[in-house]
Image 1 (cartoon, rainbow, N blue to C red):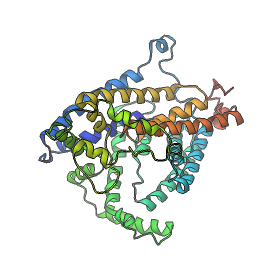
Image 2: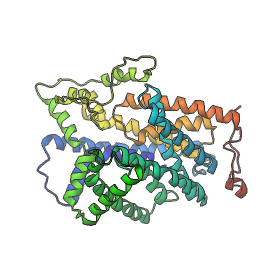
Image 3: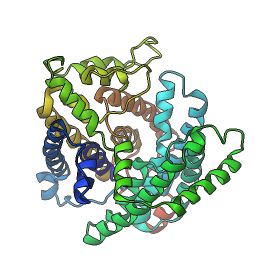
Image 4: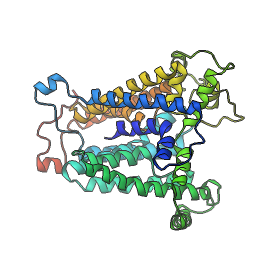
Length: 429
């Protein structure tokens, strides 16, 4: 589904994108300090760890090879019925989130349910690549695009979501096989997306400043559309503009370098946490419905400040890459080993979903854990607890569906007509 590759892009670009792009276009490197160089060094080894982990996780086992199943039919459970179900689940979660987002535990579960709109869209693209089914793809686009547009016009957050656009691009270009043409198509995807992102960043303040709040959604769209088109028409994108965008939105090597400065300075902690952040985050698994006064552990300024020596006067959330927490627990070695483990788990989980014929109550919780990697991992235990909440929620939904509709994954519509599902999936007992 492209999730592991998206996770690899998120992790690697968080520490290497600014350096790599600057070196590619010969841009000045006066921003690079000795601490940045240390970040680049362990990031390079971590990139190799990513490749090895993905290769080991996706490699067919000896039993699969001996049984002749080294190249199984991919995603046999993705049918038009499943696509519609995922889209409906995501739509319900998105609508409910608008009213219940502040309710502890329930808000977290609904936020994860809303991600099924993206799952449904990715599944529709997979189904289209498998057997040319157009209708599920059109329905998915008809739901997802207006939903993201309304959310963007209300919040000012980018409508080009990486955890949707990157997997879709990878599925569209590399699903059947990877060729030189696949990479050429990926570049064609990347150029307009980057161009649109620069235009969005230049005009989004029109939304965030509140200048459009008194207008209806339709009027907001028209006014903002005019401003966006004007920015795109007059935009003169240079490598410097793209590098600035990387530093603003993607590259976090500065904060990783600050962490190294603090850990190696006389005023630093003098020792690493050695798993302490993971233990401290264990209570994040406990729902707030049970523990109302549970401390906040979600990557806020106090977490960053503890390992960089910086401070902020507000509680604004500070996004950090997973390298930050791993380094705090054991330096460069912890980063490399931790990233290897995370990527092996992610890739193995994705391979399981790509080849499994298990029931819905197994597929949906596994999908929930896989989706948690799509948005990137900041604090490991926080991501795990959120994924666990989502997995428990969809497990209950899946069991209800299996009891009410025992043949839910047994084929529907175009699949039955074409005889695509030759081996019916087992239904719940």
